[in-house]
Image: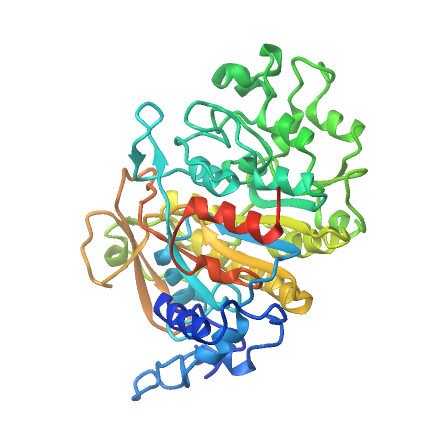
Length: 489
């Protein structure tokens, strides 16, 4: 196993205390940061080098910093409006999930060049509400959490951008469209899944993907009952300029009412001007996407395949089974775009709008692999998200007018534990980049389905308005941070 480079080319996230220190220093110098602050050029290159200094066994060898960063951090702060916002979500990506993936893929002294490369960090609280009492439900699902940042309104688990009374709440994507901005929605899940759905639909139950499920589970939303329709039907009506992900199966369903009754949702999309693509080559061929001809990429019937595969954790798996090295998932063929591919293409297309854009990108199966107690699955998905973040950051640094935010919707179950522990839950040992063994444990739920947790989440940002994620915020603050940065109505 090769040793890691002594230094790396990007930044790791700063601690909240450092952010606070820099902000206080900035306030002593300026009432507000100068409007001319250029977040693209202000910080020196050394500010972004955060790998371990050298031999981890030597004094100072594990140190990531090589001096005081106060002035460099001050230089990255700007209160200018942003022309564009790129929000990247790691579904289920708590601090444990980031650390597990980093240790495996980069080593203990390494860091992610995207996820860890944002200069301002904080933590936010996330919880849903009990639908009947309105009191906190301390463990949220992806629907309630996504609705919180999409609309600024807390709601119940399972709700898609409606409040606890079932009333629709305006989303960031809808507001961005009203302002004339281009909009995009990218996910490795079905595009009807909770996180992408919260931007484009308003339904009382998250599983109402198509007309069939909506008639049964969300009858008040069904078209035949005077509602706005299923998530897929509402997506077509909301009409983002770019929509990329899985979920083709729901488009085979037939509309049960309205103008498009009797036609499949895919036929409806094509008649309404959507350009539909289903592989990497066809995605690459697209040079324009707008309201006249939106882009709809459907690359899998369900969720898109994960990057890496490996055995699921098992009872005493770290003791009874050998440590494993994750392997490439053969189901993810070269004809299928990666999350980085989809992110890059979405940015290229949306950036053609002179008024700017709002783009949400989700790495969805960190959560899904965590539920399945599959460490290789969740690690590969985290690496995928990191590569997408790198694409967003590269654009933002060149552009100078783009706010990039990276966070998660909820925390999850995986933990790093002692290698020889006889844990009560499920465990798996992994061979890391360091040439060492790391044991991952799952044990907060039944063996068949690990559960979310309620721990606060990391949020990090780069670009105009990035300071607004520092310290402790709430998930709903993210809605207002983005709305204010883009000066949306």
